[in-house]
Length: 449
Image (cartoon, rainbow, N blue to C red; front, side, top):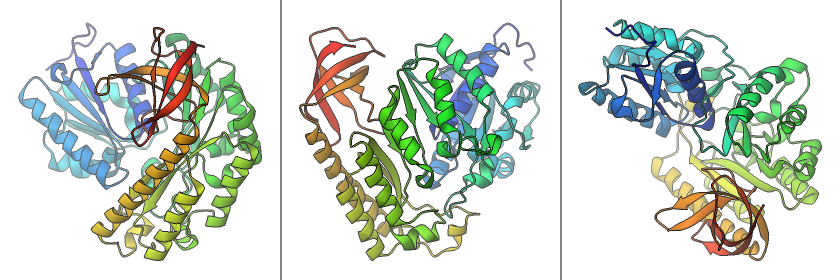
């Protein structure tokens, strides 16, 4: 038994899977345990006494990754590891079953138990097996940022009310719940004081819905006013639902100095038949008109979206509609996913499309979008971008960074060279001189900004 935690002898390791919202949960727990509770947080899993796997359970591939990671960490119990704990969406969704079938698990903590994580660890160190799937709202405000020091995610709400037919998030995370202005501002103070953050990225299941449950009005623009006071050079919006992208929001993205000219709008499909079956709240004509509105307001705004192919209502004809849309409307960035049947959702009751058909359609869409990005990038040659320098690509032996039109990890990069020394997390003026591979740009540094 290990009961003494005050001398930092108990080392806690984390494995965070899934989305950036999950990453923020991990960062809250890292702070709760490492900064405030006397544990030592380690990045080296092989030296950890306790490992917490923050799992993802959104789609089939994520569930497979979660299971594989759990068993990989369980193998470490043959070495130094003493306790293995899982949390996150996969744990919330399948916790009781996992707890019964995987004896290596010492605790399963649902998403409502994050604020109990210290007590759960202490219980396991007293050789208790703990299953905690209680429903509870938590509101941590302190984090250990695990992204590169120059950017951080800011989660402004949890849960979702949209009830798309294919999505299990509302049943896992519950109804949409905005954080208060005061709570977010307290977290912002810590981020500003503790880190040299240049870019703050707003995330939620739906950032455009922010505030309606607390303040009886959509309050995203008011929240941006609050964030703007802290002087971050870039503020980026992720996950804006189409029906709530208003002219006021478009105007703000176009005209506000620190707001990136970037809108991430998950459209999911363009066929009216498919969208209706998905229980989406707009049709294809609206999606097309929204893109036109954005581009008429400011042709410099980058539009990113996500699409599901192989959905049960998708025929070859409606798939063709989606292909034509992707080619014609030339979105700056797009992610494509093959439909994954999730138990408990309305779409799970529909007849699934053959796996090979879904994969064929997925590859077709990816190829079309690759061509679109190549065209879009070619048109940027000769322009001058403000680029946030991020590091060196060892395989290419090239420096790289991002402009405001690309989010970290999911979008394109700008590969750069120049005659002046470059510092990570600093902005540079870069002339775009060409393209690099299928998706990226290359350019030459003009000056430091």
